[in-house]
Image 1 (cartoon, rainbow, N blue to C red):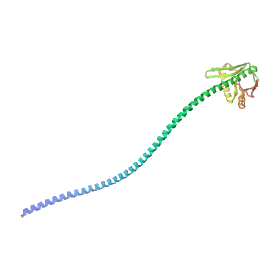
Image 2 (cartoon, helix red, strand yellow):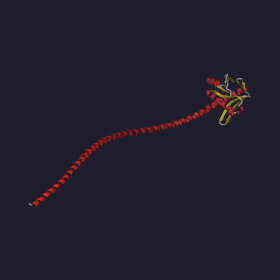
Image 3 (cartoon, one colour):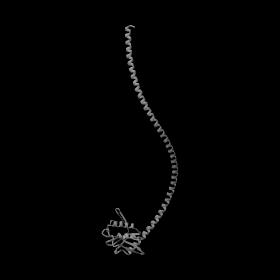
Image 4 (cartoon, rainbow, N blue to C red):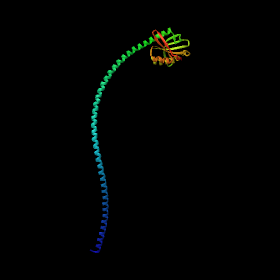
Length: 259
């Protein structure tokens, strides 16, 4: 081998060595990159394993929930069945109740009709008693037209007047030249009848202004009056007229209401 050939060989070997070194460097870099990729891949695999583990746990819980849900649905179905049975029984009871209410309504209707007839009868009796009491005191006061020491000239029965929003009917009204007496007549007098007399006393001069300058007295007349009502009437300053056989007994207190 000549020197020139040897030089070319050495030069070729140097070039080859240089290319081999460059190739080795590239290979090392690729191996390094591959190692990093493998490391990242391992980390991703690890995370994937953890996710799969969590997924398995979630699936397990889901299965348990589904199992409980199935049991709840089963119990719900049973409850619905019981409810349907109860609703059916309730419908039957409501049907019976409707029939009973229908019969009750019919009975109440018949009862109302009976009560209405009884009420009419009692109303007629009460009205008749009131008419009897009114006529008795009217005739008695015509014969003896005094209230206590006050003498009256006239007695008027059933004075009725309507003026504006006020309307009243006065059983008996006694008059003289300067005084009037409003007499409320009852078969049986109670305390609440005194409230009615109070109202009629208040309204009298508004309804009959011609008597505005007159002294106005009040009286309660009754066949029967209990002690409380009598005491209250005297306390309010009213005359109390009571039947005593065919006569009228009149009482008053020292204080008389004069309007």
